[in-house]
Structure formats: C-alpha cells, structure tokens
Image (cartoon, rainbow, N blue to C red; front, side):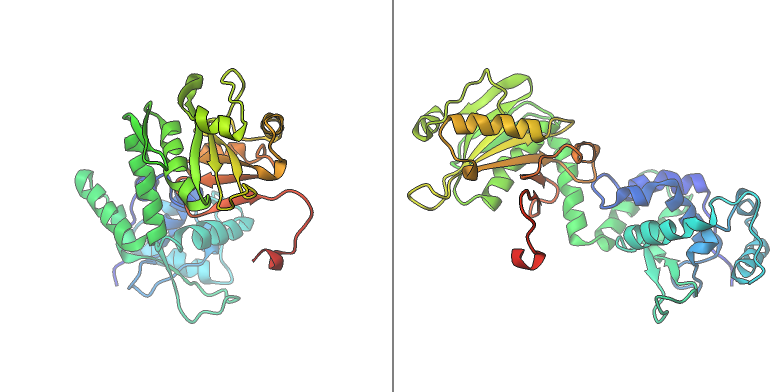
Length: 360
C-alpha cells in the first residue's frame, strides 16, 4: 500500500490558522508549532483514516529534521517500524524531549484536534494501552494538499468546518466573523424598549450591542438601559427620568462605567431590582477590585444597598487576549460574559465557601 503524500511542514503551519480561526475553542493548542509537527508525523506514518495505520504521541518526540527530510516510502516504513520497536533510537536532532508526550496527547490531541473532529481515535484500545490509536480524519487531511490553493482552498476549508465542527463551535465562529464585519461600520443598538441608538464603529461597540441586545434579556428579568457611553466619554444614552425615579444621580464627570443596566425585577416593592454596572473590554479596563469599590460607593451614595448591585465585565471571546490579560484583575463578586458564548456566565463568587451540590 502506498503511503499518503507528506505535505511540507510550512504548508501545515500556514493552513492551521485558516482551518481554526479566531473563536475556535482551545485555538492555541490547534495552531501552535507542536500541533503542526504532530500532524506532519501522522502524515509521515501514513496515519490517515481508512488506511488502518495509527500513531502514538511518543512517535512525535522521536521525529527530527534529518528524518523528516527522508520522505520516500522505504525510509518512512523503516522509521515507523523503528519507533514501535523496543530498540528504538532517539535522533540527535529530535524535535521534542521525551516528557513532551503528555502535552502532545492531552493538549494537542485530546483537548484540541479530537474535539474538532480533525483526528479519529481507534476503537477497542484500552485507555492504559501503549498501542497506537490516533489517525487523521480523511477530509481534514485533504485540506493540506499542496495543490489546493486560493478560493478552492478556502471553499474546502469552509465545507470542512460546516461538516465537522460542532454546532456550538460554528455559532461561535459565525458570531465573531459577523462582529468583525459590524465593527467596520456604525453599530445600531436596539434597547429593550425598542429605542435605537448608533455607536461608532469598533469592537467595543460590537460588545456593547451584544450586552444590551443579548445579555440583558437573557440574564435580567425586566431590563432597561440607564446609561450608555463609548470611547472618549461620549454619552450615547442617559435616562434622566428613570435615574430621578430611582434616586440615582448620574454625574457624567465621574468615572462611570460603559453601561449601566437596571433590572426592574418583578416585585412591586423593588426588592429584586438590580443595578448592573458593566464595563466593555475590547482591549483593557475590566471591573477590578478598585473599580468595584468606586462604583459601589457611587451607588450607596445614591441610596442603594450593596445587595442590589451587580458588576459585569463583557468581552468578545474567552480565547482572545483581552480576557486572558484581564483574568488576574477581575474582581471577586463580579461576573464575566462573552458575546461569542452568550448563554454562559462566569460567576466570580465572593464570600463564604458553598458546597457545589448546594448550587445546583
């Protein structure tokens, strides 16, 4: 049986970011060098679905530049046989140390390529077995055909994504892609009462739109927008009538957040009303401890109790740099929400420990 053609390593490197664009879960595991070399070794060993050939992570750490250059069938078969033998020889120019097997297995393969249906796992092999078990999905492997270029390549990638990525992943990618397009034009935001406002182009506006149109109706009982501003402290919307009714003094000269949402609640006494201070983070500026203290004082001065306050930092996606950079700063007792995964909410719970079983 002839072995499949081994695509150049640089072709694999260049195509992985196209196949797994921004917004793909665990994208870092999928587009880094170790992922490209893992895929290269799978091609080298002929581990493509339907050929009955499989690899194990130890083979990736047994590959080096000198061996990778030998792409004739005889050299490849000899190398595969050697890597499965007890007398296997580790090359002097090995790509990775022996202890790299675990991240290749756990990060690149199990948490990266398998969830994206890029790799198939051999059935009937016990978890503790050292037998080879991983093979490239046949249609995924076809995306690395060096003869596939331009529009044909992009069309093939799009088709593969539609057929192999799960629905949640596809929805996430579409939202991020549409957000990138929206960010180039003025952003029209529809408030809960049907009123519309226009924001300047940019990623912050895209996130703000998602907070008002998606987060608010999903996570608040009876939402309304009290305050909306954008870069440069430009006030886009300010409901003075509601603010007066609530006894909340909105002073634009103070460091107010990007958005103030009010959940009017369902109880006529107002016992379940919430003031939701929201920061939109396209680059930086999350609700950290200092910011939370400042906003809490502002609300208390207006006559609100702390139990009627909530603090939210909104991001475009949890795989993007702004969230990764903000994680150490996020205040306990606040929430984090992502426009790309609108049904989920991170609760940075503060206070006494609670048994997990009691939170269900």
